[in-house]
Image 1 (cartoon, rainbow, N blue to C red):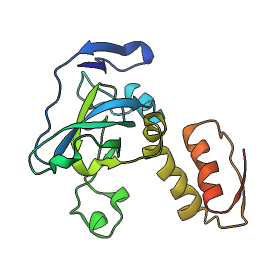
Image 2 (cartoon, helix red, strand yellow):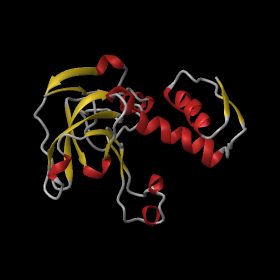
Image 3 (cartoon, helix red, strand yellow):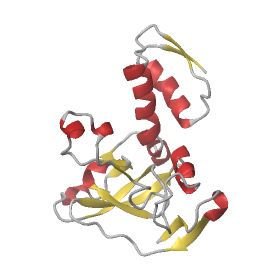
Length: 194
């Protein structure tokens, strides 16, 4: 399969298109044929050297969406053919935070595209729990959801406590989180300005 990899840290010029073996799903995993991927700000930070201990060469990419085309042992075979977005945070499900329902604070969290190969490829193997089925939107739209929308939701509802009738100014609404913030504010009944 084709994939974008980098062998040294730096700008976009370090990205190289390469042919690598198709990944095979292990126990509890699915293989997703990528139909759309996003360029997340965190991808660019990691590529620039934010995680200096990152083993190179590296296959980046947090955000993505596609179709499940293979399942590993212990995964329901009926998942084949599902359109899924990729939840980029692999959690342990066992630590204090996970058991308290605060998976976003998992003590052993691994980011897809940082601790594992990412979405800048034709296929990726991920835990089946990280493949979230969707319908009613394009692959491109679905690939934009996993990082931007939970970030906006947390900022506005959990930290900002917006409510129906609130007024919100989003500075930088042209980026993914800003665009998501306008939509989350509207969903919450707030009035948003960009």
